[in-house]
Image 1 (tube, rainbow, N blue to C red):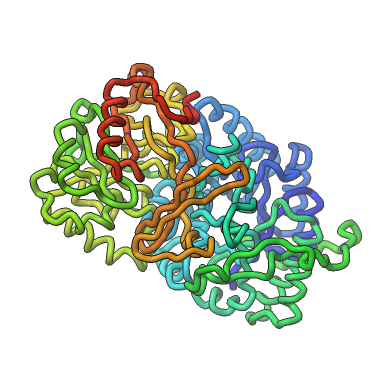
Image 2 (spheres, rainbow, N blue to C red; image 1 turned 90 degrees about the horizontal axis):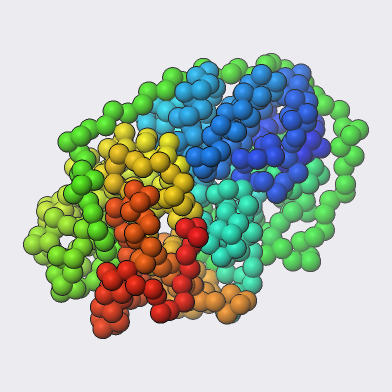
Length: 590
């Protein structure tokens, strides 16, 4: 029987979760958690929370699920020291790989859970995560039932969200709030641009309905899912109590929800109903909705203070902490930094024609091309030595056979480099030199050091990182100096959801209330990437970037190749390191 894991965004919500029968609760302190705008817990309240959970045999999980900067590690160490001495949590939920290694080195006996923000869509990283001390993976919310089952069978605990708000962006991959509002979703500050109004037939094309898997409890239990998780640290104690109470009953009785129970869940909170589209694989416009006046028929308020607090029958059996086993770098699989200097030409969504690749072959240190479009180019053997194929941002276990076929095609054409967006994809790229993509979310030197141990030849730093604040690494450092930054990747077609026709080459524009236009491009398997409305431009700052240790300067192209003359002018501008004559952003570098 799976455990029921409930949210606690406040001491009142914690009491509600315990009263309603949660086996586990997750909560955060005032810093370093992905719901920094919840009430959260001060240190006195954390101590009381630990005491309550021990008395009631409820396991307490602490969220440390944000990206960390170098300057924050000592503060985090002091915070965890306090928690270990005074709160004694059962586990820590962590997103940042470098932070995970740091914590296991400082506190060998702690238990780690891999946050959904770590973007684990498959079982590909299980052995590596176990070696880093993780005993549980919180599956990305976009996973289907088939992909959840694959992780359950992989030898690590699998935790699955069953109820609550959904991000339209792939888990852990949203930069939209960060880049347009300086409020990073990866740092717990998301301003929820997905809930805002945009132009088009559908004014809310990014707003998903809340998740509800209450009709799939027996199926999830049969898969061997370790924990069923309710989202809601920003929700009220009434919400936590009612949702936990209903799922407690469904788990205990191993059955689907009745219509009356579904209606009770809708009464507490919904956005035009619920969705199970990711789980069933039935994505599309039906997954989207907003919170209307008719949804705001809240159920009767519960007096949380007067609720009895039951004690679980048996103490929670704490899993054994896994030892830290760091990978050993393989020098034979690394291109030395001295051989990686200059401009990286990165073509998003589709490959340019072969003539353009030949034209700029000598000028490029590397040419990044989307793996899913590589066959359209035909014979690429004469320039294959400089090509790195960009793997899809998301690769489910069900996608892996197709990705392997594409990689075999590239390998047979002479390509020996791959740009990898997730540690779970490393096993697919054993025959390639690997480059770390921006979606690895590298914001600190410790994550950089771990990826160097994993034999990455270069690392493209997160757009949320300023290279001035990182120690110079042993592998080549890369930074985007031109291009529209990818803000979201979605499993649903946003073009279709805008009410427009979509097809093999579908694309379009998302227009916000300020009339800013965000290009939309199709990616692998009809997934979608939304790009920033203006490009970043740092080519005139390359001298400064060199002093920070950056040796590779990525030029990220979307629509620029449609006008060859303008494209040539842009390249000349970047090569000259001249100021830009067009609107641009400096991003987090400034």
